[in-house]
Length: 473
Image (cartoon, rainbow, N blue to C red):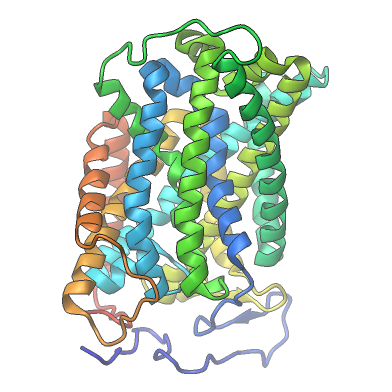
């Protein structure tokens, strides 16, 4: 058990130097799937991916939808989501420091629970990130149209989807030109976005408690009871997918033993607080019924309520940045999930080719971008969000199970730099909470999610059932 067997279908033995094929010059020169991605991301880059991905939908798209379902108690829904995310972020951090490879949850589960579980999760992660990215892009389309409206240009709702699709294509091209380019964009967007939110939420909180402006009329905290709080938590859990996306680029992070846990846990804590404060400020401005009527861009009117036209413009701009950031980071992570699965021969090896000029998995980026654009064109906001949550919650639960399995067996190669505090209670709770939250989703999302998982299991049986993974128990 202490020896890592070589992977099937040409993947090199762990520790063997990668072989580069460059004898023939072509416009699409590639490195073989034995190569590793370059480590160019630091702690700020990891935090930017985590915070930037999570902050978009949670603050700028969900408040109206969530308040309509749970009232002011939607703040509790976001808090529940943060607690579940934190219970998973800690086990994921340990696994990531033991296996700092591109692929994140897929890589952990395949090494802890075997090839079948890894294949189902890895391929489902691909589709889960595709659904999440499409959701973010649709949100971007809404805010782009609102931006034009604030500038006096009547674009109309018919332009939401075309704008979203065009921006998704542009993000895909940007990621092909290099991870460092995408990370620089991410860092800049997140810094500006957090500055806007800090000013807005500080003023909004002071107004909400009556220290400035007129006191807000009190509203019953949970007008629809307890169950909608949990169903809303299942819906908005898409907001917390960003910390796991940090793990998908683990193979590109410098000093992963330190930076991975800090980036994953830190991003959950920062964004969880921002979500709860945002719902408090939003429901204090209008009440949950009015927020529900305003829908995906309710926060624009909240900004107008507190700070007039300047507030509306700031929120429109912030929403544009946030959804842009979420989409950009998710496209990056989707391609790395495909890259990792292909390197393990669960997909054809061509999907893990790396472009010599930019050092990026350009084929995987194409396999990510194409389905994303197709789903974006549907415009189904809630379904996209819940299917993404379903597939990620399955992965999160299995990440916790994988940690329990690896701790029980302790293979020779398992040597994490970070150990989960409160073991085994934390991973057990993380698994139970992740699986339980799935039960509160709408049936359509559950059916689509289960269908995707069955399809991935069928692909494994057809294509990859004889695959042996490096480090497999």
